[in-house]
Image (cartoon, rainbow, N blue to C red):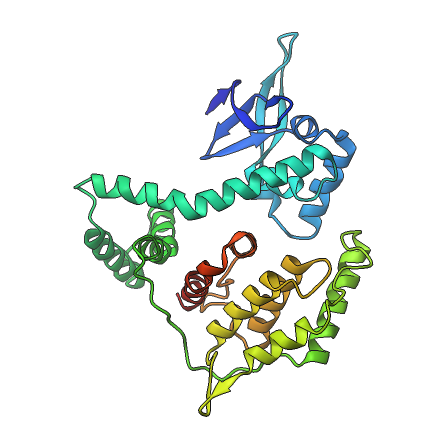
Amino acid sequence: MEENKNLILYSTSQKDIKIPVKLDKETVWLSQKQMSLLFNRDRKTITRHIQNIFKEDELAKNSVCSKYEHTAEDGKKYDITLYNLDVIISVGYRVKSKNGTKFRIWATSILREHILKGFTINQKRLKENQDIKLSELEKAIKLLKRVGDNKKLKSGEAKGLLKVITDYADSWLLLQKYDEHELKLQSSKTKHELFGYEETLKNISELKNNLAKKKQATEIFGKERGESLQAILGNLRQSFGGKELYPSIEIKAAHLLYFAIKDHPFVDGNKRIGSFLFIAFLAKNNFLLDKKGEKKINDNTLVALALLVAESKPKEKDTLIVLITNLLKN
């Protein structure tokens, strides 16, 4: 475990925000007091946001907070609860303050830069290491899967390693293809059904009511801009020569997420509504979960995709559609 008292979390035009943090388990840890300083809000506000995060099952408490020993100025030692980066980011997107707004701007820009550039850098490092070949990784994954299927792995440690490798292996390969512009559109031929206009409005209304109860939606949330929503739903049903232009669940879902965010059909809440309709469409067609019963696109990935779509350029549309469909397919 490391402590770096000079770590700059982010910079503003006025001054740098410097907070001593714990670096452990490949993440950053802050206390409620430190988050209060970071976002310039009182500790009660930070506590309330953290409680709501756990209450709404956005994050699992046991996996994102931990007790650490702290030495006070008088030399006495006592335990203090610290929260990892997942909690810090979640609080940052909830808190209402100038610092909170600046943090969200900073976090969004860093996320976009990481998604667009970070994996390329990592891939170069992998290529520089001649001992790590992609083909060898694939062989190792197949071997581990086969051993796991034969129930020859008995130790918890080995099973944990197997889970990490198998869970992320497809993502690694997918990201490599993304970097090298070799992604190809993959989709299924499963029958599916798109929302009707009235059904879509009903779903959005229920979302708005739920968010309003938590004071997370204004009166203009979900208010339509002209007939943009109807146009989007109509576009997704288009056909040519008797064939649908968006023939599969994955392709429709990807375009629904893209259009609902990028075309700004609502006065407020486009990213949240687009993400909600994306998930609702997959759930409606029994395509939300994989064979293990886990979400094909988890909450963090969905947030990343929504932000990436929102910040993308029109010429990047096809690349984003291919990326989303591949994530669903894989």
